[in-house]
Every structure is written in structure tokens, then in C-alpha cells.
Image 1 (cartoon, rainbow, N blue to C red):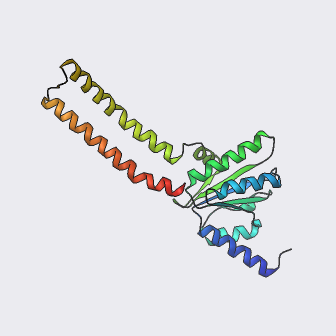
Image 2: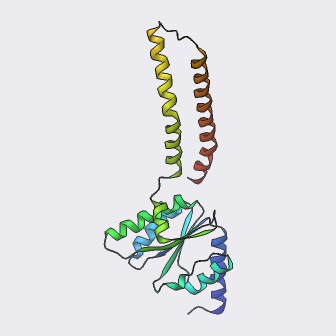
Image 3: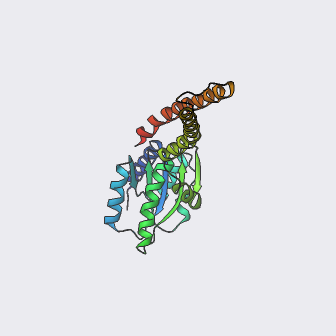
Length: 205
């Protein structure tokens, strides 16, 4: 039984963790062993995250004080909270892999919901699962850059083929010149956009 002072400390701890976090994920970890939880905590630490178990009533107070509309008292199961400093998509993937692995072992572990601090929004468990299955931010950036680069590469290939047929010279007609400039401008835009996004990815890695 916690003393009144200890309860105050738990509420304060929960409040500070919420304040320092960009992502919260609430897990029913009923079936997980002590060793499995330790392994999960170690994985989260590499992402700058923490997994804490705070009494549900005290956690509820911390959440309400922080303006997070999630009520852990709606479940009878024990609730553990992932406090992540990274954005939801990054942390969600690690949590989903942990839950999926334990479910394959026949254990009862469930994500009850999540909170996206960036958008100040509570997500239901099914919404969380959809987000967790999305490609990571750096993969999406690479795919986007590749999508833009494909037509640019194809156009430059055509120019090279024309040059070979004409002895290495392609006549710069107005149409070709206009298309060439358009392709080069698009290429520069993609490089700039990717360069602007890359620091954010590295920073969260």
C-alpha cells in the first residue's frame, strides 16, 4: 500500500513523463514475463523511450492534469505506458513488433490505445495498429524521392539515346529545351525537399 506521499510522487512522476514525451502508448501486458518486459524496455531505450507501470488511478490523475483524454480505469487488466520522445510512427512500430511477437507465443498482450502528442489526439487500438504498419519516415522519404526521380531518369535516358543516334549531339529545339529545364527544376526541388527532411530523420534515429 502506497503512502499519501508516495502517491503524490507517482502522480508527479507520471506528469513529468507525459510532459517530456511526444508519444504515449498504453499496453495491457498481462501475459508478458519479467524477462520479456526487460527486453522490451531495452529496445525502447535505444529509441529514447521508457516503459513504466504506474497505478491506474494515479496514472489517470496524471493524464487528466496533462489534458490527455485516455482513461486507464476502463480496463481491469494491468496497464503499462510507453513514454516516447520520438514521433508516434517510429515508436509504434517497435511496440507493435513486441506485441505481435508475444501474441505468436500465445500470450495475451494488447495495445489499449495511444496518444499522439504532436497532433494532441488519442487513438483507439485499431487506429494505432494501422499507423504501426506504415513504413518508417526515412523509407517514405526514399520512396517519394524515387517516385519523382523515375520520370527524370527516363527522360535523360531518352536524350542519351537520341544523342547516340545523332553522333553525340541532340538538337536543342524549344520543346526539348523546355522539357529539359522542367526536369532539372523538378530534380532540384526533390533534392532540396529530401535534404530538409533528412536531419529530422537522423535526429530521431
